[in-house]
Length: 139
Image: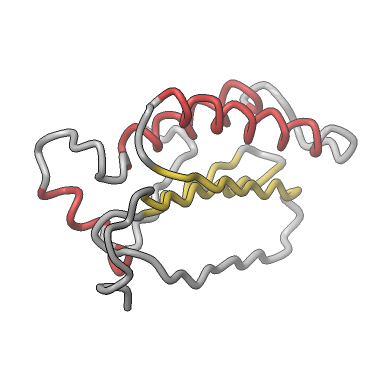
């Protein structure tokens, strides 16, 4: 099934720990829930549209607002940062990166690329756990 989505997992930020945990601990980054939230926000906003530079800011605001609203409804002890890039498909390259300093056991990120025939979208959700006991353990 090609739904236009790929999920990038950055193992060096502790996401491998999530796969090992079978339970839904409140202090563990809710990766699968976030992937679903992001995919739903993107498809509900963009699935019927072709790239239009006059609508990009509205689309980004709609997608980010929908993600933040749903992330808040998870009632998990995290602060979230959501970034969204929408770029017209015109053959130009696009590179993005992030450098992070956080608790590798609790914090995490999900980066979801999406595309249709006229645009590329990259949406990233960063989650940092609240109530960090100590600052030791950061690399």
